[in-house]
Amino acid sequence: MRNYWQKWQRFWFLPTDLFRLALFRWIFSFFLFIMYVVRLTEFKIFFSEEGLFTHGSATSYLPDFLKPSIYLFSASDSLNLFFYVVLLALIFLLFL
Image (cartoon, rainbow, N blue to C red; front, top):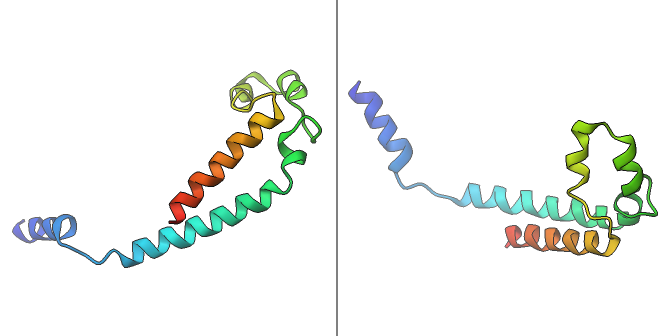
């Protein structure tokens, strides 16, 4: 039992090198940022009223259990673009 307790203490409280964790965070946030920048180039197709699935048709055709996820988006294209750019900025801050 004492050996188990020492392993527990060592796992949680022993100082360790955080380089690998920082490297993983940097690589993950870099690829996430690149993925969302590429997705920004097709913003009108996916998130605007000129796109594949408009806000009005989404609220009328989707079943009730999927409607709350649609209401996360605004009916205004410019407001959706603003929040998308804010999301990009927050992902970039993860990268720093």
